[in-house]
Length: 151
Image (cartoon, rainbow, N blue to C red; front, side, top):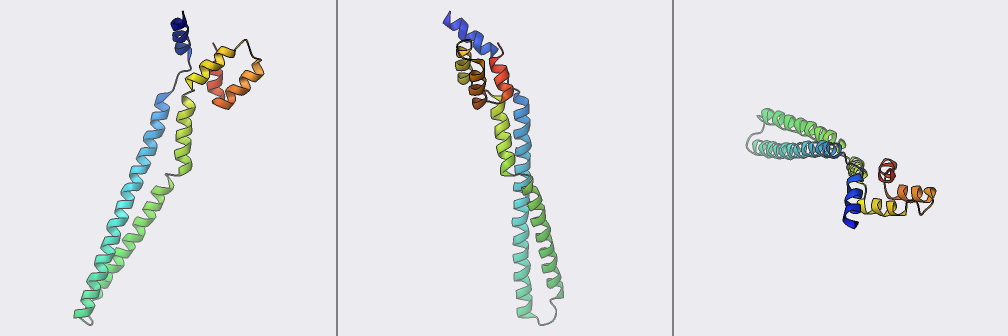
């Protein structure tokens, strides 16, 4: 009898929209990967600036007046570096801590705590509805509360 009751409660537990949670996490993963790639591009651009500076320094140490080409290479490398930094900042701004938290919260909100739900259901009929609703809303989202208590 007890097994049948637990099975019935489990089957009546609120359903979870895993696809929404999965989509949110996949979107966040894409944004993080883009920011990571942009970071590597900045690193490569920084190396190119260092190489251009070294090349210009060498040119100046061996030649007094024929380093215009090397100066142009350095300016181009610095411009590219600034563009890559701007790209990185743009990608990074799409990945914010608040977004990570909201994704995490939305996924948690999709999964009502089964133990809490089962405990709340045990008190239905024994506790006042207002007390039960208040306790439920402190444990899970209003939508999941309605699902949990709606047997």
